[in-house]
Image (cartoon, rainbow, N blue to C red; front, side, top):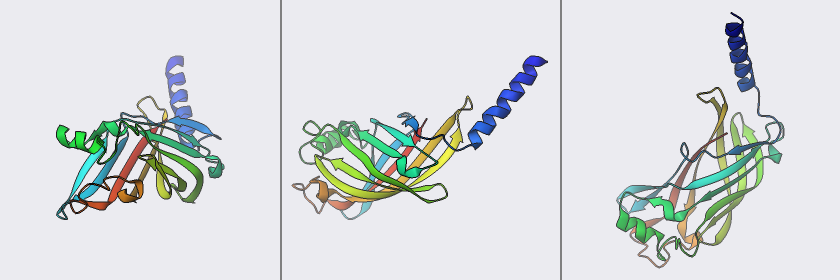
Length: 191
């Protein structure tokens, strides 16, 4: 009976903890298994084509009380590109596009974070692709979920467009074959 009461009490406490905002400066680690980074580019002016990156990692410092103290650092291995075709993947990793051997990391590091609404954040930072850094501002949606063991799981999602020419990606390749604009989809789980 006592063990049952303790179990109920612990369950109630876990639920209350989930309802509370994250404490100041929680350090969250991106869960690679449950996170996705995908892209969409138009091929031959006909139809969008999709690909993804399989190797990604990152750290999120989340301060719910003062969002300006929050930060995001995120990296992708360009050699983990997956377009569903090994020959095309090798071409995308080549000098024509990512030059993955010369530039083995793509990254984003925030410079400022502000709350823009309930569950939404405006994040400004430096995006580095193929050795070129550009400042971008993205809108990020944030949700708080609960894991299988009752632990807090944070979800972050954003969509944004980059111009691949700004990062010297595919500049020597036939530019009529692929659109310059690339849509990025980033969905991260972190705890």
